[in-house]
Every structure is written in structure tokens, then in C-alpha cells.
Image 1 (cartoon, one colour):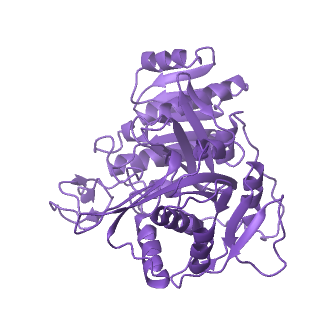
Image 2 (cartoon, rainbow, N blue to C red):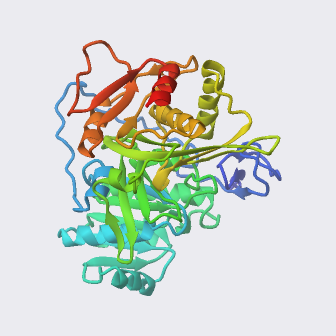
Length: 459
């Protein structure tokens, strides 16, 4: 029998090469290319041997048919259920990633205890900790009375055989996928081939048994889930558990969800007894706003379907360096450079000789361009030394011409601002007669950045 032809796979990005090389041309990493034998199953390792038998006919149905809504299993942890789209769908597979020590295992242990208390069968398989360590954490969190079945194993075949031996559980946690291995491959645990194959086996088990499978994944230094990118395509939902080590809160963010909205967030606060839900994150991100200070602006943003108000802080100071500093925390540094260029080219505010520091209070990371107007307002306020009134919020996108463009979901932003007691909103100019006074708010509409500079200089 002819020996199977080997291939060389980068363990960082999954790129395949016909021969060994010291440096991966795809990701640029050194000494990450390892020889692997391709799988022969025809599923993940290429086409299998074909037989002479023809395939069977499949049923084709019209698109306008009625399909019942997928049932949900609720954990009663509202922030977790919100991010998942209203609970876990039976048979779905979730991938949870996050930095080491951020609290992934703590969160999932609390979630599994909540499912168990809701009379659902829950199984927690740890490949990184012994059962005694998991029990110690559960006791510290006050979860020891929850009927969660614990297991410590890394052999995936043994895990699946155990789960298939009895009635299928409702929810299964695998912590983590990088520690799992199968003897069908010669490579070590954590390699691209092992992670891909083990994830595929877990997806197959979840779809066949109807159990919701939650897979924990390590992240790389760039913040991406380690392993082959195809793993994120195989699962139904991808969640990232985020947070700054200097802050006490954590954010669970959905970046992919086949059963709910993407970019939805759930906010938790880390305490002595684990993670506690934060039902109104706007009050957390605004912090203490007892006095007005220059360089601060409140942005009315949207995270998934949830409106969130967050404080932006800017500091513009004279620089003694030949190349002034641009430090950004919680926002895109390229977007800040664009706003600075527009202020210089379109409004005559030269900031090329100043150091610019921008911070999103509370550690939240903002990705939507609607924050442009609030960032520009905080920069103008810091440069002029005149504070923006504390009862004012801003939102709007800035174009390269200096015009302020409308953004989506304005009504939700206005309602959140009114609920938290704000009185004024600086926002893009909309069609005449379309936007009325909302909830007692004074709406100040702007067409370009010149209007904003004029308004802040006299306010």
C-alpha cells in the first residue's frame, strides 16, 4: 500500500505548502510549518476515494414555505441570553474566545449552573483543569449545589463516547478546543489539523444529538481565536469575551450568530462572587459626571440592538517631539487620523504640532463611525478649553468633505439619552419635518464641522 503523501501546514494560520519552509509566506511567522498526514475521511482532509455508486436524490423545497421558529433554552442570565439571540438553540454550536484570565471559565461555569438550576442537563468538560480545581472555583462562586456533571479529559473520542452513552445533555461545555486531540491524527494537540478535526467532530455531535455545544477557544496575540479560520465558519455563533485588566467589567460580544443579531453585547461586572450582570451599561460607562471639564463628550452609540451612552475623553497638548504622539484607547487610530485631517484641511484647526490622546471611558471598544462627531467635539473642546455642557450628547458620521452625515437608529439613541436625563442632542441634519422634538430633548442639527465649531465656541 502506497504511503499517504504528507503536506506541510502552518500552525499559526493554516496555510498548506508542498515542502517545508522556515517562514510562512501567508502570515510571516517563523518555524510554524509542521509536516502532517492528510486525513482520508473526505471531510476535512480532502476528497475520499470514490465508489461507483451514484448519490441519492435530495428533496428541493420552495423558499416561501413555513418553518417553525427554533426553540430556545434559557439560562435566566439575561445578558448571556441576549447575546445568544434569546437563549441557546438545541443543536447549535458556540465558540467563545477571550484573553487568558479574562473570565471565560468563570462565566461558563456560572452559565452551566444556571442551566442546571433551570432543570436542564449540563455537562462541563475541562481539558485544562482537574476536577478538584473546577470544584474549588464552583465553591468560591457559590455554585457547588448546582447539578452540573464535571469531567476532565482531552481525548475527544472518549468524551463523545461518554456523552453518547446516556441521554443526550442539553448543554455541553468543552474547555478548551486547543487541549483536545484525536488519535486519527499524528499531530500534537493544538495544531491546526487537531483543532479543525476536533471542532468538526463536536459540531457533528451537536447536530446529531440536539445538544448545544459551547467550545472555548484560545486567542492569539492579535486577539483572534487561535487555530484555523474555518473553525469560525463551522460553528453557529462566535462570541468574544472582552475587557481591560484595569477595569472591573467584562463585555461578551457576538461577532457571528446564525440565530440572532450580530454585534450584540452583554455587560458583566467582575466581583468577589464571580460575574454579575449589568442591566444598564450606560450608567457604568458614563461614570461620574458631576462637573464639566474640557475635552469630554458623551456619545450615543448602538451595540447590536442596544443603545449605549459612553463618555469620550480627549486631551490635546503642545508637543516637544518632532513627531507628536497619537494615543488611542477604545477606538480606531486610523479613524482618529481621518478626523484630525478633516479638522485641519476643512476647518483650519491645525493639530499637527500637538500630542493627541483619546480614551473611551470604561474600556468599551467602539467600532461604529457614528462616534466621529463626538470625537471631533471632544477634540475641539480640549483645544479651546471650553467644556461641552454635561447634559449634551453627540452622534454623527463625518465625511472627508467635513459634512456630517446621518446615521442609523437615531430614535433609539434619542430615547436612551432622554431616559438618562440628558437635555440636548447634537446630531446630523435630517430631512425637514422628519425628526420632531423627542422626549423633551432639544435637537441641535449640524450640516458640517464648521457648524459644530461655531456652536461650541459660543456655548
